Picture 1 (cartoon, rainbow, N blue to C red):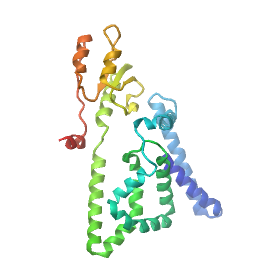
Picture 2: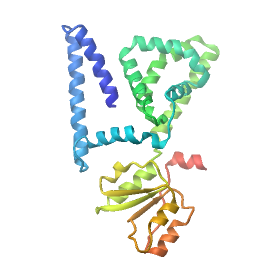
Picture 3: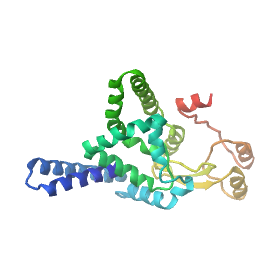
Picture 4: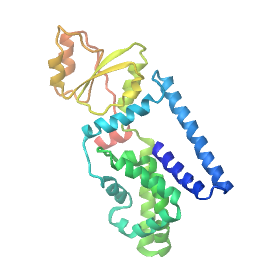
Length: 278
């Protein structure tokens, strides 16, 4: 979102400096500046409210992407281009390139925001389609003239336009009503609500939204259950919690032999997760 704001700020700044006497462009620039200041204050307030220094969340996010993004896998620079072609229903994207380009020229504000967001995220080694969700609406706005042109042409092109609208609506409905991280976020919130600071061993899980621990949980990561079991013994104090994706090595039973281990407690995924696994 910050990238989008910066691109919008650059757009209105260029427009203002080209015609500084234009009152409308001046008011637009001031509107963006005031909105940006409000967002900055809100971000600092959110960090402060959860016990962090203002903007610590932003700094941690940037540092994590710069230093550890590749730990989760890397993709090529054109990965997101492929994703958007897929959103446009694959081969049909070839018929939409020209109207898409005309839409960018006709709406430079929307085009600038979309292109800058995709370009910056393409430089990050690790890429996932969900990272493009903030600009998916902008993409559809730029794609709309081409879809409208298809619809007005009649025949198979109109059928394609109807199919495109249905698929996008269904996809948006699924994305809006599902949360792929719900199981992980719920368990972290439950632990944080216990009040006391605690230690959690994270076994076999690379990506964990630690923000939901509200700074009350110390995380210790282990690639596999065997590493965790080797690290802890009866002579060494166990963590308060053990988070594991799939207990193939009967870790819970082994822990009960070492101490009074309670559980396990299962956190299932959301409805989309459960449906996909059915």
